[in-house]
Length: 199
Image 1 (spheres, one colour):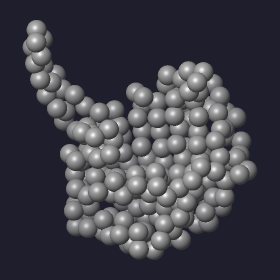
Image 2 (cartoon, helix red, strand yellow; image 1 turned 120 degrees about the vertical axis):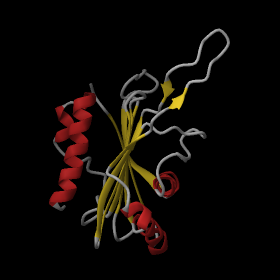
Image 3 (cartoon, helix red, strand yellow; image 1 turned 90 degrees about the horizontal axis):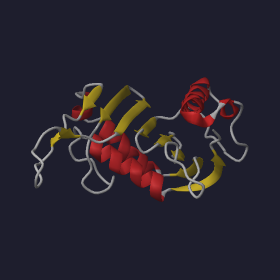
Image 4 (cartoon, helix red, strand yellow; image 1 turned 30 degrees about the vertical axis):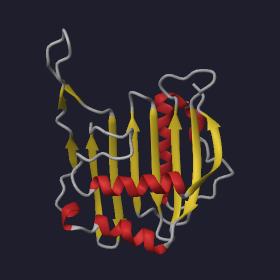
């Protein structure tokens, strides 16, 4: 296991412990997970603090996929306890190449490191005047470290018109990258381990 991957996983577990996972999570990886060799070349981190959901997706140059999601961290119930799910999968060389090409576009190269949605004005409703703005609680961090392309771009507060399928107001090509990575996480991975996140 490379130092970079150890750092990624260490930061993930540290973040969970800060939210409520406890120091037990820092001891070791669950034994059922076959972590790919080498460093990931593409990654996305999704943080939804208000709803208490976090996810990380890593793609490797072999096409291997590692996806980690954490749910119910903020408002857990007995029937929906705080849980971390580990998923693995594989994509073919063509799919990986298509994603890499989005990161290699001139538009991605021209992006700033951080974007924040300015907010959508709140429309007046009967008896209540207009005022203020609506923003989302999601933070999206896109990363690539492949050949001569090494960049990280973060987008925060963007709204979705379709329950998280797309975020069309994000600067191009972030929404296209997001859709591709979301499809991989949902359709090209299988759960290999699930564990409770203890308070």
